[in-house]
Length: 204
Length: 368
Image (tube, rainbow over all chains, first blue to last red; front, side, top):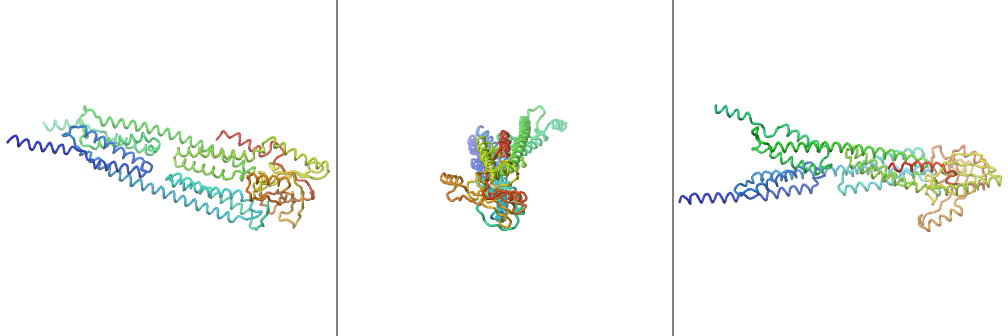
């Protein structure tokens, strides 16, 4: 009787201990999933330092799991693993959200820069449209070629945006905007020189 | 007594981790981020970040708060090691960034100066059209590289500067290809021979003749084989090239004659000498170009090439004609008659302006 009174609770305790010695697989998988989703959101680019720290958190988690796994079942305690997994999941979700936000901001800035560049080129094209025809057009022929090149260069901005290389898109847009303004100034100077007389078309 | 012993024992305890050490490692982390370590040294930063996160978790664990002085402190040792490695990475990245900055600045300054030089030479020989869109393409790349430099993204600035360097080399090569004939001895010899024949005709026929050198933008009037006067001229907006079709802005080269003189009220350009372009050789060359496909089949050969004055004082270029200041035109008009030969050549000397510009550009090709 005494032996049974000791054995049953002891057996129950052992069973409980063995049962509690399993790693929290679902929480660990959730943490790993959060890391993967952060990576897919572009966190390595847009939140590089936070993503690196998130990787550190997962490394610490995996290390703790490995340490507990290496212990005798009765001595395993996955409480810390649960804490680390929960923290990593939360952190991963935050990094993903932050990364997506930064990516959206970068894209918005690139689109804005593209718009500004497009407007500058359109403005320059409008000036070219005021260029005289006939003998007076000689002064503007070289400039017109520059404007055509600028117009074609706008495609590069879209290509960069499509590749999600938003810093490149912004720098290209800024360069086109600056050059458009310079060409516009040159056209206005040339128009002032040519004057306002209309001329007939000639062969040449 | 027992309480006193406990106090003494506790007084001898030391924190598991010096707080200053934690703050220093945080500062190193911030320095690494500021140095763009995740991009510049991704493996080093990832290793640092992983270790830092793991150690911070241990620091926050309860059983590491205090220790006896004689106890070994693995946690502090690992933190100090991390501190050392992080500091080493910061130092290395600082040196790397300084080197990259210098490399980017040097490349950009050199290329920007080179671009300005080429642009200046191209403008001086009015060869802008000959290069098409290449100068704009190069200029955009230089602006992009400078933009990356200003943002301290030195790797991108260097990469974009390299692209600009290639574009500049392509631009220089294109210019040499387009106007290289002005530096070709055989071509110059041919032009010199043609010009001499015109001068000889003037001497033999005791008459006037005109020779125009496109490279020097100079018109010379000969009378009885002797040089009488010389005037600066402006050409077509693409005057430096050989004429190929109507509207290309080039000034033709060849042997022509004055077919008509247009005086005051007969031309919008003060005075004008009408030439017989296109002549038979021009037509033959045009048909050949169309046949070979170098010009479009819908192209037209053009015409109405003249030597004329200025419509207004601000006109700088023509559509293909040869333009003089009105005072010079008046003097020339008075000495020329219908039938006067007009020979237009690329150059009459080897040391012509275009050849000199090409020599200058060619000598700096290695700078790219």
